Image 1 (cartoon, each protein chain N blue to C red):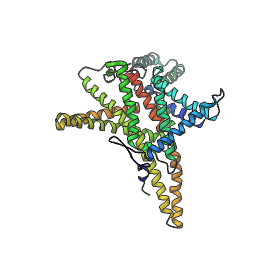
Image 2 (image 1 turned 135 degrees about the horizontal axis):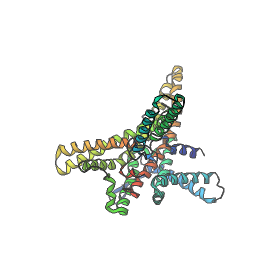
Image 3 (image 1 turned 180 degrees about the vertical axis):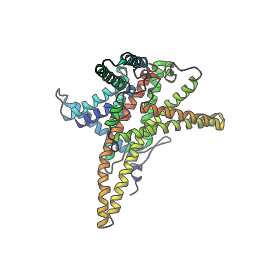
Image 4 (image 1 turned 90 degrees about the vertical axis):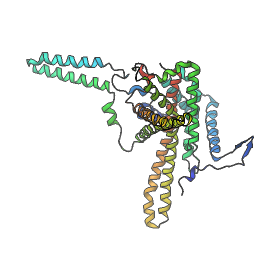
Amino acid sequence: MDPIHQFEIKNLLPIIRIGGTEIAFTNSALFMLIALALILALMLGATRSRALVPGRLQATAEMVYEFVADTLRSSAGQEGMKFFPLVFSIFVFILVLNVIGIIPYAFTVTSHIIITVAFALLVFLTVVIYGFWRHGLRFLKLFVPSGIPIYILPLVTAIEVMSFFSRPVSHSVRLFANMLAGHITLKVFGGFVVMLGGLGLLGWLGAALPLALTTVLTALELLVALLQAYVFAILTCIYLNDAVHPGH
Amino acid sequence: MLFHLFFSYLAQGAILDSHKPNQYGPRGLGGGIDLAEISAGVESMADDAREKGDGERPLADEAALSARLRRLGEQLGRVQPGRPAESTDQPAASDPSAMARGFRLSTELVAGVLVGAAFGWGLDYLLGISPWGMIVFLLLGFAAGVLNVMRAAGVAPSGPLDRKR
């Protein structure tokens, strides 16, 4: 009945020690592996036949591919296409993790902030490192808007820098908070059904309302799962655009 | 197929995290509108009205006026694309993308403030200038958060980079 209980990390295998670090295989790791296996099965199955007229599986994979490619191309340009493997991996991985999380008894990997922070930092560091490697110090023009009077420029630059550093925070918190809040809501309404159902006939009548709400919320959660994966990918593209074209 | 439909619906800008953030933006700030052109149009309209103000041909005048009004409406529509349309397009309460939008805006603001606080605390800790780093950077972080929100909501151009497009 505890709505937080579903997010608990459990060790599934005995902890292995390598050097001073503990290596644990948790339920989070298990579900990441499951997601990976699903993606691999989809992609390998889709590319096995390589038909000119695609079958169902191949059409799905092609749709996902074209969707990500269009998104990336329209926000980061042709030059941004070299980041396609990164964006595609992030999008599909988060999408599958989110969708798996809706299945009852499954663990939602993306509802842990450490996971989403790792994704967001991956994108952030890619932007920073590639930006400096490609453009050198010209990358810093990102923080200096042109056409600003000199006496206000330091302030504006400081604000732009803060804005830049707040990106990975909002990028990660959005995905994490959406998944966490949605799953807690589902659990709370599910808990209402069980509690009211224990009260006899009147309780059964009362339980109908939260049951209906749970059904609707599950559909909403599916939407949120797709939406948040999409939003994460879109923002990744927008941020990568800064690395590819700083200072335009 | 459903999958594709869903995402193409998203890609049409049903939510704020559109990949073309600079389709918004106030007039004259990179929105691709020339302020001078608009004001020139308004002036010439006023001039026309004065010239034909003697009331010789009221019918032709009215037709011209309505034509001009229509043109002005079109121009306004170009200045603020989809402004009336968008607000009527979106169903109010039960729209999940509205929730996503609210969520996005709130996280943007909170992220700015948090990053400012973290920077201030770090500077205080490293340089030993105790309250000042926190004071200055918390304010800067708040400003950055507001800037983030304005960018996410499309009322400010989405960065110094996007001026050209």
